[in-house]
Image (cartoon, rainbow, N blue to C red):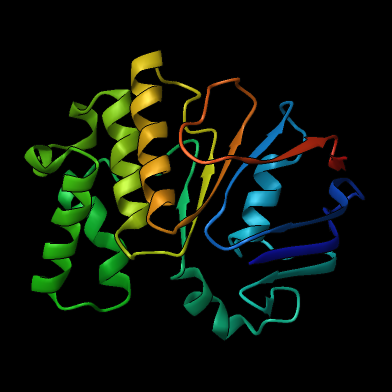
Length: 217
């Protein structure tokens, strides 16, 4: 479960990207984080992903308070969280398989097991036949699916996704959203940030709407 109580994120200069936000998202839920550009969606995802820390308030993931969690404990928490960034952050000097292998190399998984899991992740997103292709040779939709494979290869319990369909055509967007619905159906908590009106398939959605850093009720 993810619980936020009076959560605030203030940057240097006093700008509050998130202001006094409170919500709960149950384990295994699918949630849609909506709002205009600059509403604070990406900041909230970074807070939930333990990339940034709150300025004040409480944010707990699985009972752990991120505001008070020791820095040395953060890498262990992050292993349970998959992140799909809007700009994907793919490594263009490595083929698809090596991009997906990277998180497993970081945790020291033996190479044979890491390759098995990486290929399984590529297969899940329909890219196993492209494992030797470099990202530059992939379409926009394939690059997004590659980023998803890398995010789920660690088998996270939470998947945080930032504007996954922003640069995709309708068919590619539908394929990507179908993937998130499939992960949710097997128990992964999926939180998707978007300002676009794409229909999210699958279960009933928990919808959170941000407006200039505040949660609308």
